[in-house]
Image (cartoon, rainbow, N blue to C red; front, side, top):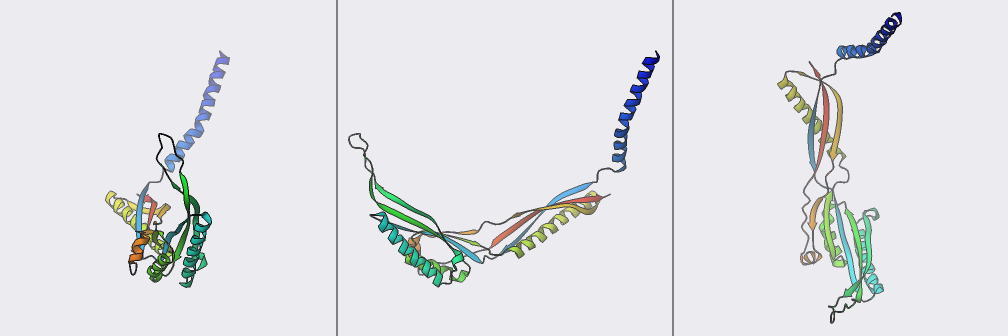
Length: 247
């Protein structure tokens, strides 16, 4: 009997000891309840006129042999590059890409149900060129000259900004102000006071360059000058802010 009583007493003591940390934790939570917060998002946008254009076009030449097509292509591209440099386009703003040599085929209908292999009739050489134009006043003239000297494919134009940092900063300020205004409206409606900022994060959406579309080389040849409208680039920033609530 004494043994059973001792065991029961020991078990009770052990259970009580195990419950003490839990009770202490609950008491601590009650003494320091979770801080009331409110989370809002704010958006800010700022626009700026582009100060740089990016041109993407190609020189494409065809000839009976690959060597002849390459020679014609290289000469045309060299003339274009020289003209661009004469227009004060720096080497850092010129980049060739997507060079390719492809055979040209003549295809035949099956003869008496028998497949007839295509015949190589010549070769096509293509060489792409990307140009950054930092003086937009020269853009139309550069396009005209490039087409006259051998650019005969592409004509994509996009407008962007070299250094948009000041505009992004303005968008950030507007986003934070928007978040704070939302938080004040919500807390006033709820009858509580807005406290300190606990956490803040941002998600900036850098705009894609504004496309001016594709201008066919044949269309540009017919025009005395190429009209250009650059528009504006819009930079958007979204902030997520968590505030404490003073109750």
